[in-house]
Amino acid sequence: MKRTVSGLEKFLKKDGAPYRKARLGLLANQASVGPEYTHGLELLDEAMPGAVTALFGPQHGWAGEKQDNMVESNHGLDRRGRPIFSLYGETRRPDRAMLAQIDVLLIDLADVGARVYTFAQTMSYCLEEAAGSGVEVVILDRPNPIGGAEVEGNILAADCRSFVGLHPVPMRHGLTMAEMALYVNKRLKRPAALNCITCDNWRRGRYFPQTGLPWVLPSPNMPTCDCAWVYPGQVLWEATNVSEGRGTTRPFNLVGAPFIDAEALLRGLKKIDLPGVRFRKAHFQPTFHKWVGAVCRGLELFPLDSSFKPYLTSLAILGEIVRLWPDQFQLKAPPYEYEFERRPIDLILGERTLFDRLAGGEDVAALEESWQPGLRDFLDQRAECLLYE
Image (tube, rainbow, N blue to C red):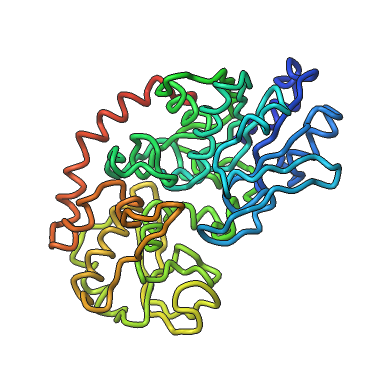
């Protein structure tokens, strides 16, 4: 099987030739690397000296050093004196002063295939602002690490739009960043000038280990591809008092709290049809974040194959926890990702009644069935944006 060639590599080899005289901006982070782990900025500086004039960082910062949500990054300078503009702080959009320093914005971000991962929202804002500033956007594409064949979840409702979801896509959307850019750009009132540099040797059914590319954590709590695989479901714990494993070496693969009885939880889950996953009863003690220093009891998730449904699985776990420990379980109050009024659980799930239906005892299989019409419509709409077999 041939190694996947990223959009960055193709841009450096030949596709960047038309941009050699342009002033380039680069929206990237620590995971924007070539096949030998060298950062894309270093490669661009070597191949096109003086071309990159401004840098832009998403959530967690240009270097990926910032933890968790609502941790604002500041502007700064790189070692060559170029500005580094934060797009996760006082503003989440590049303003005219930032864009005035460039002709073309290169976006090279490693996404993880989930609607709530904020990099897609940052890209969306860049497309909007670039359209009004005459700046071209070039997406240096990378594979969707959890494949592009499987999709899952309800479609984001309009009244749940936020920085963890701006467009009507399901939780697991099966798009690469370039495909998402095409999907978003077609829906903008004023589309941006957009060029997508695709990957070579990637097909929709391939997961990240099959690409031959190096994994560099795209955010501080995304250390492995296995973590990304469970993330489209496990992210929902951010809106609760249940730990998603932050502060441990297995963030998102772990779920638990001091009030949970792992045996009882596992016993309840065995009654639900959850394909492609195994659970291990687990005890863990977070060193930071929720329940720091306390012993949490719960489960560790092990996805097995492409039949695994991360969103359904975590909803099933959530339903069992609410049923078994209704007095101890709590939803997180706002704020969440710059939202100060709406419930975080609704923003993450993308629908205002879904949690209440689940907490009221509705079967997860019934919930899954209810979102199928929306999924079918989404698949029809995304077909025109697909760049890979």
